[in-house]
Length: 99
Image (cartoon, rainbow, N blue to C red; front, top):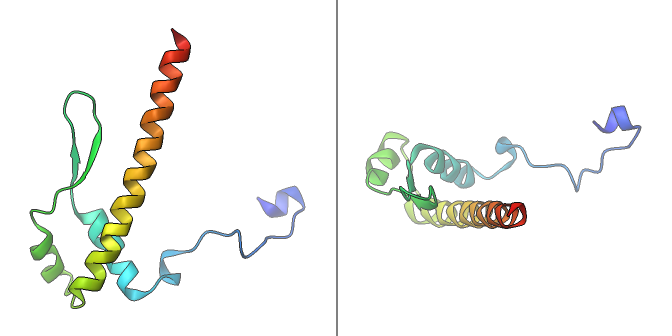
C-alpha cells in the first residue's frame, strides 16, 4: 500500500508478524486459537474462551512454561474482549441511530 501511495514505510507503524514475537507469545496465540469461544446464546455476546481442554492442549503442544504462557493467554483474551465489546457498542449505537 505504501508503494502505491508513494510513501516510505515507517517500521514503527508496521504490525508485528507472529514470528517476531517471543516463543511464549507464539504459544499463547496458538492456545488462544485452539480454545473454543464461549458465546451467549440469545445476543451472541462473546464471553471469552472455554478453558475445559486447556491442560490437554498444552500437553499436545508441549508447552513447558505454563505460567508465562497462561499469563500471555490472559492478555490475548483481555484484548479480544475489549475489541468485541467495542464492536458491540458500535453496533448498538448504529442501531439506535437507525431508529
